[in-house]
Image (cartoon, rainbow, N blue to C red; front, top):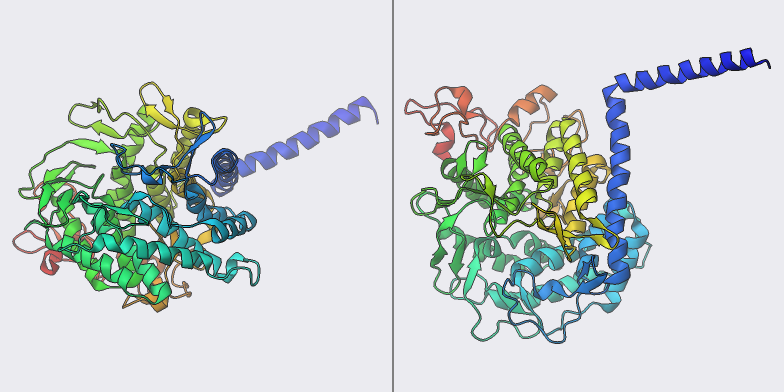
Length: 572
């Protein structure tokens, strides 16, 4: 072939490939598909960099110290800010492995999941002299075991036939029984601390948080349903009911309370640390168990939050007794709130707050633990970022609800920041100071159970096909089962999703029950809002029916009364 002909064919081939490339670039669906594949693999590599280094340098201890490539037995330190009463002979409970099990399955690694389950079945024991935080132990260890058990017995996960004998459920039940003595108080509110071997210690502090008392129902309720022993769910429900009875006339709760007297210790409250998962578990318990009581609590609490905490897209803190603002600050834990709003259908409000959190992330490169809104500056002492998942979590929920590709870009920004600022040779390290990006020698277990998981699900949600899940506050998936339901619209438990054009899951179906005869457009309208409060008026009054949204219980549009209140108030 002459040089002329050779150059001609090269030019033709080049033109053809250029045309194909340009065509694919002009197709936004194709672009997003390629983006998802690339980002999925980037997140996968991120997870395994963290997981493999943990297994190499820290397992079977609790968590990895990535800078020194050593370990910490941190289960007894979680929530223990003063590091008091630390155990002498505690050598860890493989905390990060427990937290990683469901993530391994979501990433499709059945082999490593099965290997981890086998090791825990043969080696893990809770008969240890270790004082642990009830809340942290419940959401991380008990929740991790219960979730992994339910995934292990699911035939779709292809666990080797006959090799699993409910060992994780046996461990979970043993742990649950060791946590029960914490509830032995006059009020039913549990102690914040419990010794796994000896129960409540002498002279134990009687102070606990709203989250600790009000965020136990998912894990302990699931344990009761799986074992047939009601005492776990009964204890958690009694604590939740008692906590709710202590609310103010404005339906606000404080941050800390005395478990013996039932008196509030800290009256200032918000949607962040110490309170956040209380709101989260009311919604998710309703989805998981179908008990109307949870939804009624949430409706009242949610409207109170919107009325007394909300200021534009932000949520400040306020005194539960007066509703007057106390602290004007962003805390990183608040970033879970948009995800919760997606579950109840307030998509517009969720998007508004989420975008503000994204702006702060972009300003610093990560999300600082506390940012003073009134001074537009970092908190002088809480400048750290411990690899928290909440912004990734809300991004995942919003993308599931809207399919807006902008959220894929946010996820890419989060992933790139984590790799740029926190990835080290030995894993991923927390940021000690976001203004200097100086690192801290700690890789928290929730980085694998939540941060990596939500980022992965953002780009590959195939795990959610054909099954609704509720994710606990620690990111552990619990399947929504019809056998567990008191009474919940069939849309949450039925496998027939023909009334929705795309794949459905608990991430995309709001509490407002859809009618199977509805068109896709009508479903979207009915999912518009669950507890809408007019965004544009500071006095929260409505002007027209359009301000009032849709009632979550009946799916009927609410009307604006002559007095200027939406029909929702009739239900409170």
